[in-house]
Length: 324
Image (cartoon, rainbow, N blue to C red; front, side):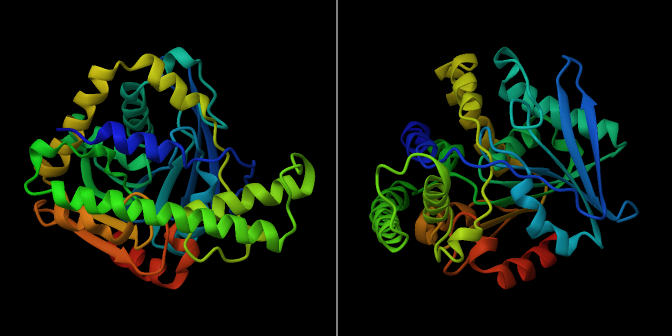
């Protein structure tokens, strides 16, 4: 039995369409890299070019963009180099729908690796970017040093690769229902607090509502709502993937990702918030991680999907350890 269908449906309903933002850090350089099929990838390089460790960074989505990951990575940029980019079809890397496939996502990472003349790469990935990281590990195992997966969804799990996960998956489903009720409650409370009505469909109040929705789904503590930094999200990327990738191939991809997780010979660090919707309380990942020899599973207490927003000090501490 595969859990992909149920998990994917829940996951993609939680992705809001939000704002645009971008800035260039002081130690940042941007590039436009053209792929073999003519897509121009927007790539942002930050950090120490002479650093021992270079990380290719994969944002979430599918269809988000990279800028929301800059702030949590900057504190580590003196000792590391990070190569962030907008995946094809996302904000700064427009692409025809016909060219948006999982295979092309993998090829883009390989194109970046070669462009920067990296013999092997480390990958740091958030949310659905983690699934692309596992795709890459499956197809190019010899090119990977390390994976850091943050908020990795359970949609990568094919149960034939794991033992005794039916009960943890059932606990996950129950925990997700509780999580969703709490999110709905928090949204309604914040709407009352900020005096937002259903008629506010444009302007400042509408923008504030989008921030509330984003914070409720992606954080646990919902701190500083008005200063929430959201990622632009283009839902057409996921629509294109559904159109271009048949249901049979989706299933095969799930098996490939699970195989890469189990058979990969590289260190894998999985960092999830305690109240991350991908697995509230960690029932499923806690069980799975014990069956993956090279995986180190780390849970951040009182944190959601974007765990660095809830517990920045703890996230910084953990990331410093796993980066080096």
